[in-house]
Length: 318
Image (cartoon, rainbow, N blue to C red):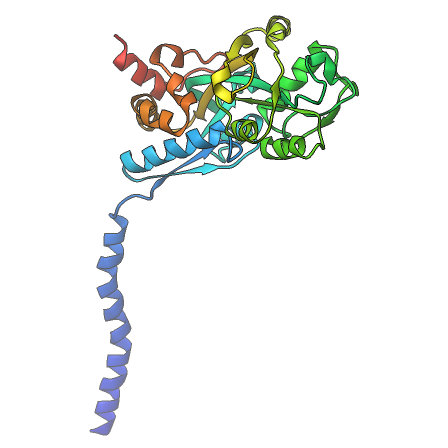
């Protein structure tokens, strides 16, 4: 009798794991039919105190709120050139960039496309009233921040200095980001700094509220720049109302929101719709976003629009 009981015990011990596994299988099968994993949207921006970041944060909030199963977040970067690299490499889904930083010949197959032309970047040359810098030529021999490595500011500034015959060692260049440039000017470590951004640039506005600053006009250089780099540069005004300093005319070039070329057409169509339909909300995060329009958004030379963006613009075309 004891032998029978022992055999029954052994049989129960052997059967129990099989029963538990069988009970677990329906649950495992059910998991396979659960909600799909969230779609990640990483938005490559720039400095936390500049336009790209404010615009990107607001856009991420809208996407998370209005697109089901989407998780959007912003990436702090050195801006345009790094953003292009991240989107092209598939390490970001969206990014902001100046038009003049884009490659003139698209890759084959294409790695990125455009969603919209969003606003114009204006090149700021910021200095102090006591620096003696009143024109671009006055930068010769001075300590000047030309922008962070990998930024649109650095590329546009380098082109400008070359056109003005201030290349090479004519200017003592520092490669600082926006926040470090502001602090270096404040403490006298540099004589001036360049920054390319939509109006107003938050850090420049804060600096102008704390101490006297001077903006140097660069508008006369738009035509020479455009002659060497066709298709981008125009002259735009920075009025007194922006920073409370004397108005100037400067160099401007378009700014684009770009996207990975392999993103689904339906997703990009929705991204485009929200970008254009939520302009008022985006403009509350930064006024530059309020300059978007459907008419200007489609002009994204040299980058083609993503098919999803084309589909939305065609659907709403009057």
